[in-house]
Length: 267
Ligand SMILES: C[S@@+](CC[C@H](N)C(=O)[O-])C[C@H]1O[C@@H](n2cnc3c(N)ncnc32)[C@H](O)[C@@H]1O
Image (cartoon, rainbow, N blue to C red; front, top):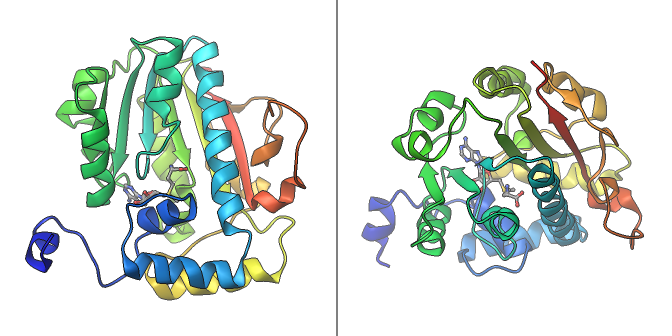
């Protein structure tokens, strides 16, 4: 693709992008030199970063499977990133092929590749939108065609809210999505945390700060405050590997660097 073509599609090759850096961390190929250089700098100060990304993806698969087991058949994945093996539609459509999934991201490469992966899948689609503008997501024709907000929906925010600093009101943003959900809807959320982390995590935050996509790591109490109006389901807010694990944990859970929760809207 030429530089002009990249610019036309809104692909910024000057600065690392969170979706593409994360893709590199989980072993994907949808990234550029600028992303790989940044990811390597992160791995230099935080060698565990790849493990953190992988256990986050494993949690995401368990969380959406849990949603499907609760009878949910509609999923809205906000900040969905690059399509990877074990993406949400693969997990939930294996349980019920009629499950509907809307992915949302603002990164053009993630959008283009998701569209390719989803081609021919009538029940899953990609929306390119700024998720910090809930109307853009909720009123999008693709969202309106696939999701019925009169029925329960699982909203997924996996490794997304830590890109929203307090000054941009993440609690208000989550509330805007919550307000349109029917009772019985769920929120699956994971976030980077300071909890149990050493000073290498501070060094990686300092690197992200310089990259233009600062990270806001949060404590369990800070996450609890973000999800007001939802009832947090057992086991509560825990390190991602501790959330309803499929078997014995292989590594100390704090090495995940991330907390996770699934919560339910009661009324
Ligand atoms: C670390 S990745 C997480 C990907 C996936 N949810 C996961 O957990 O594996 C964060 C994603 O959020 C997206 N993102 C960040 N801010 C966004 C915004 N305002 N609107 C839409 N997507 C956004 C990034 O482009 C990136 O793909």
